[in-house]
Image (tube, one colour):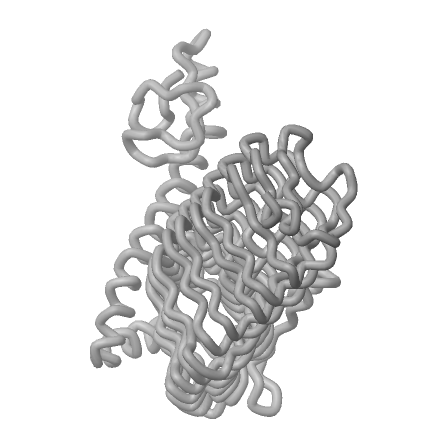
Length: 425
């Protein structure tokens, strides 16, 4: 088949033409007569050509405005402000009591008038109630906020997939839940120093967000705040942060380096850093006491993890599926190791369980196929079912003399040695 726009050969299953980038509209190889050709031109070719040209115009606008936001961040505010003055029409805005409730225009660049204090919206992930101020605009590329704005509300820019530039004034202190949800074109954003809260799912699905600096005043990062930000490679969490929500940085698959706060945070939320494909080393700071369920599950390239003595709990499947992990030490203050905590860590060859650990959960080390020998301290009083099942190379396990175990804890080929028995030999 031939592309309608440039006549290049196109695979019938292609999403776009590789030559011109047009959408998958195909040109028939032949027509039965001139009338059929004419009808095709009028009903198919020209309408699709116009749509493609409009798409290309918007794409070019996104590229130019992305350059503009970088200029803005280096002090050139006049450029973006001038663009906003050209494109904004106040009649398209509904403003009530200092809150921008709705924008119904189709401008590529929107400048919010001075006096607006809050960008409204509605976002409830649980109920699926989403209502963005800009109604998931496909044309919106850049927004200039006035200095009067102090709050970016829930779902403010929800679904604006072509939004690539936002100027956030210094007075903003809070970014609401889902504020920039699935703003896929957003590649960089500068958060002012006064921000104290980053809401749940606020930047979820911003797949091109490659750079963000979390200000030193932020105290909480909500559930799923940066989930699926595929382009992030480095992340520094300031010491001011005291709470990191569930899946806050989950599925950031290119993230290679995380700098944890050295004070403040005492718990890492469930699935907070799961599914990282680029993270090679996990160093947990001394202030962390709780590693929640699935906190680092699926970090397949992590070959080393440092768990400090401050940790008292390692949750269910906390490191499940970390297939590159080769060694781990469970510190003495961890009284219970969660179910499936290290399940499927197939490269794990060195396991140290410190004296003080009392309980090892079900399937805690299931399918750790590289383990050949383990020693459990006298403090261990319980091992859950299937704790070491599937460890096909585990040949020897040294256990406390009075520890009760079920038949399903260890593989049948594993030799169980009671500590007293060995001391008598």
